[in-house]
Image 1 (tube, rainbow, N blue to C red):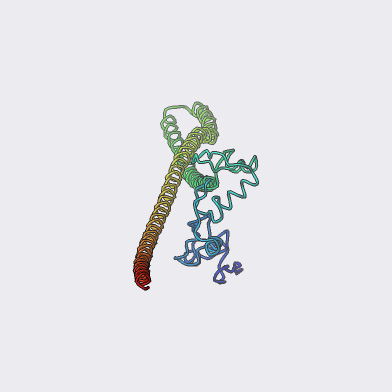
Image 2 (image 1 turned 30 degrees about the vertical axis):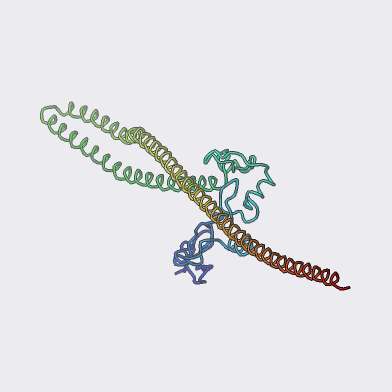
Length: 336
């Protein structure tokens, strides 16, 4: 027996059949469970999670170490602006495609016109990066659902036709033979041999015609039924896919609104944090100014007291000197 070829998993290097490995990174089922593909909390790009606590990609982790925590981008509101007020994706797109325009899905001014090449992938719509990813996911899901729905309908219809055709033909032919034989036996007892021969020829011709017509009849009967079933399946398929697209679009809108709420909450928290920092800084500066004012007032009082003490001493010296001069004058006047 020929054994099927085995291929190695890119993570654990164990060998598995090609069907059991993932399409993109060729991972086995255990590695896909242990290392799932998740979205980065900052740049929203998909990456393979190494550990359950790791929620940001390697590029964002490196940028956090180098530049600190990012800020929301002024265009797409994704928390990935490590340098300045715009994320790297928006800065590169702005350099390449010009200023951003309004997205047709989320109504934010974060969609860049990629001309015909980019719009061809999203059915000619002008979408931002997040809405483009969600739209592609919706299209992929609808394609997979159409394939599964079409294959199941075709298999069920083939089985029904296979079971109904031989049974119907056999039953119809058996009834015709039974009727023909019973009528022939009834008439043969009351007719002459010549009349029986003519009657047998007529019945043989009619039976041969009837044998030929049922072969064509099921095809004619099956045509409208097949047309009805195909139209029903097409209408069910189109209605189901339309509903699925609407539901998925609503889910994506809800997710985008939740993201916007989270981003707004984060911006509010950041502003509150900045306000508290400013208030704390103001209080600190105010307390420092008060301490300085108290110190200056104290030093001024001390200097004033010191000057007043000096003035008192000088006044005492002046008074003593003036008394000495008076004494000298009186003494000189008394001498002959």
